[in-house]
Length: 137
Image 1: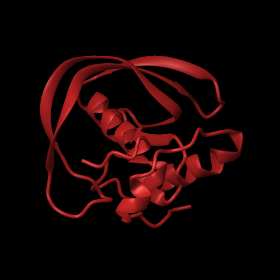
Image 2: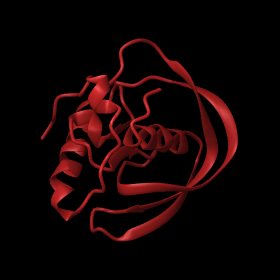
Image 3: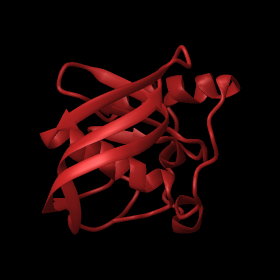
């Protein structure tokens, strides 16, 4: 189900709780909402739809990927980026990102996976991981 976007900075500043099997419907709502905003958005965290759970969804260049409980394991190649966010009003903001990252997460079957990302997908994931920590750019 497509959900309304959350804009409350107090809610968005809360760290997300661990996701469990009971939270899989949130993952589907997140995917539906991301797809509905595909023209202006490439990634979302569950708190962006009002659910403080550690779930992100993003366009990896080949389709949508969902990660439950993602953790950044390794990062290299720091650079400065400008990013916007559907949850925040105003234009792009400067932030630091890494060119290459390694992430551990659970897929929709709750299987643990580790994957390396580079370039724009890595940047998207880092933005969404910030959301899960309550960090707003």
